[in-house]
Length: 199
Image 1 (cartoon, helix red, strand yellow):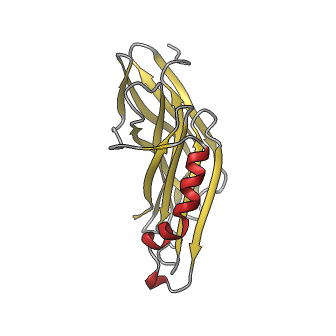
Image 2 (tube, one colour; image 1 turned 180 degrees about the vertical axis):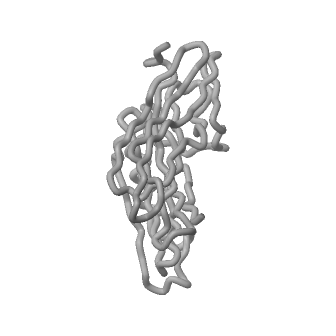
Image 3 (cartoon, helix red, strand yellow; image 1 turned 60 degrees about the vertical axis):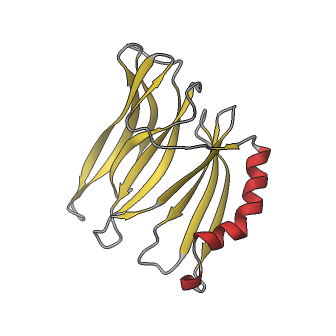
């Protein structure tokens, strides 16, 4: 597998999250890094900045990117009221809030692509479940010719013990350009742990 790298930056009191994704572009000889601010209520990307270069690849890395973009990123985070994370970590597929326990999981359906001799995703739903409160679907996507092999949540991002809003880190596995190694990419899905659950 070829793995992108996910860097969580910070979180705002009104439910916005900022993060950086450094794409593994192998075998292409380039650096591609995205910085995003996302609304965890709507999951809409509010701001995206790209750093992409194919020049002097041996001399370009994450430090080069940060030196180039640091000022722009810090100003944008400030404008959205985003404070840096302290000791951020992925909690795994379970989390507690207000005395309740929650689990996250996905349900996917796929179709067989005869030309590729592989099963690709047709749709994917992500759910949060609580034994006490019930469950709810927090995300649903339909795909066409996606070449996605799998999609599942790998854990909650801790936004603080008193935050009813949470962020779920989701992994997408896409078929490699010429087969293996396949590409592992990340996305963030927001959810409210206080409302919307049904038995």
